View 1 (cartoon, rainbow, N blue to C red):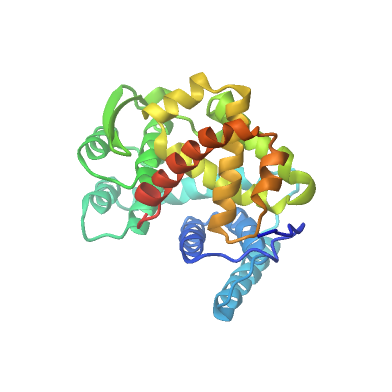
View 2: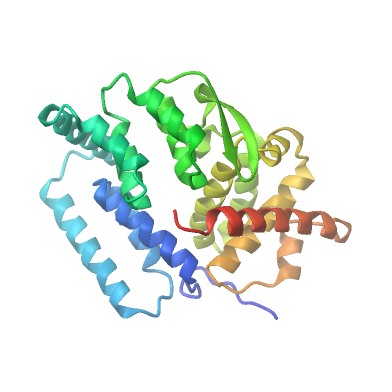
Length: 305
């Protein structure tokens, strides 16, 4: 089947897995009062095709509310919105701790409890970044090493430990492997991952920026989650050390294909292979990469976060 690729996301249909992922992300951003990031996400979602009109109405209402709040509390343009939101959230958490000295332990219990939802655990974890409690680091280390946790939540625990200036080595289960990680080396963002891993996303960006720029945003989300999930595994170590320029192009092709499949946008495989300058003799190799990524996504990422 031949596909026509447009310059917008109007031809993109969000599959249930993608919809659930973005709804969870939006709810988390709103609960953490990260309104700038929530606004950017809604603008992205409103470009996609969604069959449920009530969902679209909900997004538009949230967007209207965010914009009204932004206008009401408008600050000088020189102040970075993301930094301001982070500072406000830190102040909120520390104020809560001043009101309740047992706040840190309550948040830890939220993580440990089997009765709390994964969303509640995420919110508790984000607050623990700013909790001043000497025992929190040890409790987080113990939890992440002894408990089976969704790989994205698990990776966020590692990031929180680094932000809290914890140190040491942890042995944890990641995607079916026992891996050894150094807390001080955990990437805080996509920018801190090794160059070869970032080059894969950059290659996709080069291919998409002229004929399908809207794909870049979604692919970056998918790639960040995938790399976060496999951090420390044999596959990750292989990718950060041994990738050739040709393998980087093949991984970028795989990322493009899987991203397109997730949001159900049409593409012509032969055209994509040509755009990424993949030789016919490399077909078997990139298909192995495809099944590696697909397996991780299906078995370890596409279940309840």
